[in-house]
Length: 226
Image (tube, rainbow, N blue to C red; front, side, top):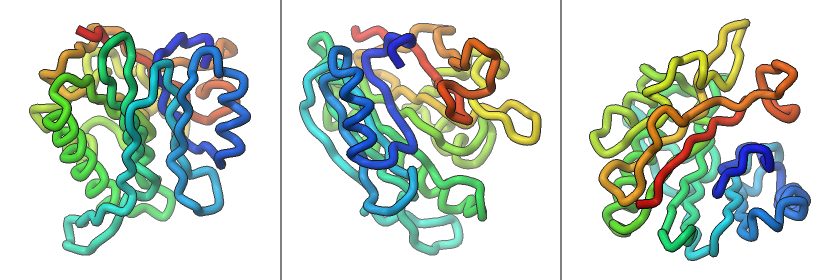
């Protein structure tokens, strides 16, 4: 995390508040803000945000009722954590996400998560027009899939790695094939701008598919706070 020099970080699979506190304790000089999206369930399914700015507001969306394509009701598999920070004089809103995995797959739920996240991001940008609004996390699907199409197909949202060669933003390996399943989205038209071609997957220097013991690489990008 230190080596990436990020101003704000979205984390997935943070086991508990104790785990986040332990991590935050080593990074307090960089990230005075640390917020957990707790589900209250066992296992590493919580998300978190580390931020270098002052905390303004936190919202949670896991209780929101979602609708699958077949009309059945569901909810976010993990918390959709919304953290507002003041960074360099600009409000930055980061949504940390971790959509439904493909283990015992429920693709309708993942699509419902993507559709709801899209609507929540757009609504947040409308409520705070001066803010830079971002979504980052393990969305458990690849570009071209229905969940990613629901996000990327929205005129308001930019998938920031879309301008990069697929191999440079691969974050996970499945059956020997690299996949981009971790993503960053920016709400267009806000004061912030994506720095073209800055998105990149960050792997261990050893050549491992993941980073720091994780089976996922990190995805990073640069933004101008205009």
